[in-house]
Image 1 (tube, rainbow, N blue to C red):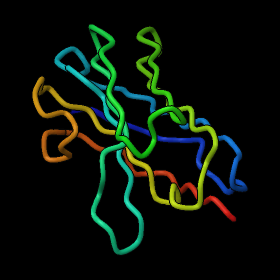
Image 2 (tube, rainbow, N blue to C red; image 1 turned 135 degrees about the vertical axis):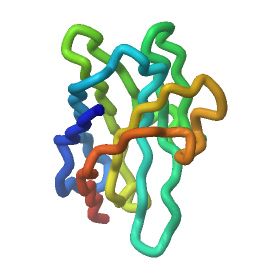
Image 3 (cartoon, one colour; image 1 turned 90 degrees about the vertical axis):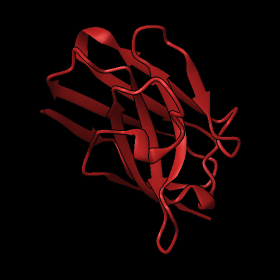
Image 4 (cartoon, rainbow, N blue to C red; image 1 turned 90 degrees about the horizontal axis):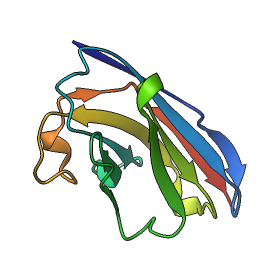
Length: 124
């Protein structure tokens, strides 16, 4: 079993920054990657970024590329999402998730465990 706890969400003005954290505990030895996803009201959950745990391979959705940065601290079993130049359309509940899969890591169905989510609201 794996437990994921997100933190760092909040209300910020457009152009501002937030840093989300996802602390993991439990059976982490089989992880391959951790991802960030988001879901706005009335919309499907969408991919934001992922990072491969051992190799540090990173990928971003086009909508956040150049503004968001994902990073990890192996010693703390924690992944971060630094979000800069935030826009109102970034408003959503942000979730972290972990997977044992190595393929198609932008697909939320590939992920085994999910956090409870943290709300990010960007005002215009």
